[in-house]
Image 1: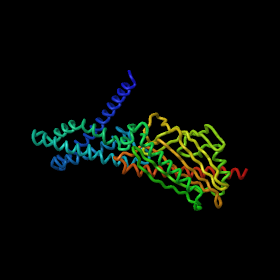
Image 2: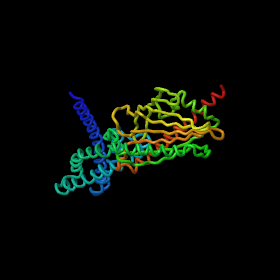
Image 3: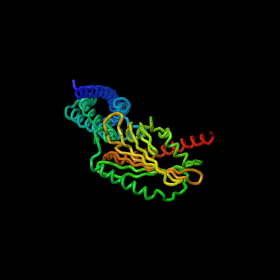
Image 4: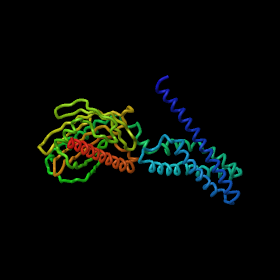
Length: 375
């Protein structure tokens, strides 16, 4: 049996199990719906039309809870998006399955009760059975196939297109020229950590630029540069799972880093970076880091991170060293369907990542330099 047919068989079996759970939850909801309908019609004296609407909506809420936590629990959003995704699914569940159930039940009930003159409860049993398969298809293909999972699935481009790379190379050239022109310009002696960024759309891609700075009090430039080159691996931080120096030159490093990115979905990368240091003056130095390899550990390429360049500036100023960082990345474009919601979330997470990087650097250098002074 081929890998493709094996995968298809496994997928079919998995969907069959999901359907069985869906039907089990549906029948529990059906019991609730029938019970509510019977009470509203027989005990409360409601007419069958409003009683059907209320009974169906109670079943919809019941079914959504169990589908969210059992039937489609494997399609949960990443941490940070859970509430937003759950609310979105609940709205879609009501719009799709809920309205479909209500409308379908009303139409079928009108036929079974109004035309065929069946008792309301028996008519509702037949109506629910008729709607079950349609509801499963709608839930599986739209409601619980969350907008994040659908929009950021493995159907992305396997590699950036040539026009995407042309736009990236042009942007890199412009960025490096701008940085070079401003490298010796005086900077304010800010001591508060800051971070800001912007996004630019390019053909079939997105370029994110983030800038930040941090002040390391009591540090000396020579000590900072020495600590950055020896050992040469990034400071301990949440996003970095492992790292090592592959090779070392007089003023350059080649570093391997396994990094985890959390943005809409969580992805682990094996990356390699060429980092070159340049001493500009006794009080100023710069560094340029270019990712020469970016591979998803899980295999494939979903386009979440195609390119990554980082530009560092280290300046000795009153009472310490100011570190400036500008990071630019290239990724696939954000689908229009989720752009209004996903773009702000990605932006927030990117800023948090920049802040964590700078905070980790300040903490690492502060501890190491203090230890050197004591020694």
